Image (cartoon, rainbow, N blue to C red; front, side, top):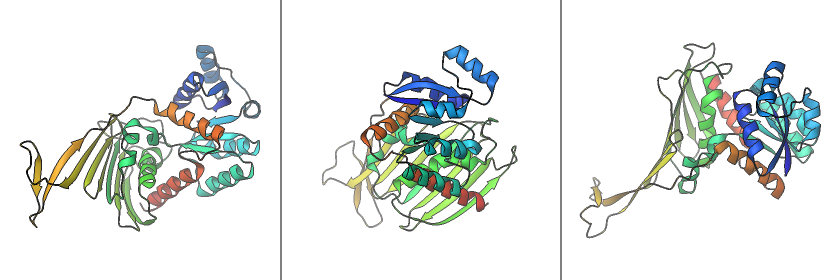
Length: 319
């Protein structure tokens, strides 16, 4: 089993601690948090071992799980990689592209693996249809959240939209051609609502909307491609495929048949793929453990994290 230590014991850090302790692939060595009162409370309540120095925790583990504020990502990840430790790092990977590139070079230099916490790649609603994407040409995403002060230290693009940026980049096999965007600050000093249009070299267009001052939560993506329409509800963990094929010569009584302007008849049919219940955060942590043990590419590696950050920063600069 791999020895893992968690940096950061805030809301998400406590979730990582709990899941690392439950995992059959990791041994949870302990955690570090700069807030000593919070650290002592977490240690007493859950029985986790508290390290009062980051360097001591790094020395004691094989994998460093970085669940700190984004501004602290680079330095602690750099220290971990420089000491030959694998890193799991929450999204966004770093504050700047230069920092992200530095981590990539350090991971190669020290033969360490890194994975970025783009957790929606492991959402069961997405994994249920992951193999059904075939050259999508239009994608529309909506990620809306009720206001929560946590995360407002960064623009909504880095807080929420970056999840959908990573999903889009993972299913569109083409380079980005152009980006246009708009953002509005309502409560925070940085934009709370943003919309971006990403055009790809192959003609695909992705329209992304994110808001953190919505009256209801929504995390939904619609994907349109030749002869298929795929919907993914990341929040409700549901997926649906609407497919089109040539209509049979003698349709059944309940077949749904459409005829286009050219007189061609098509049949529409629905598929509801099985969405297996799972914990996406546990799945991403354990997929990283398997990548380390089997010496394979992490599902969301550091390069993927840098690409998502690159697009996110381009969107912010387009406001």
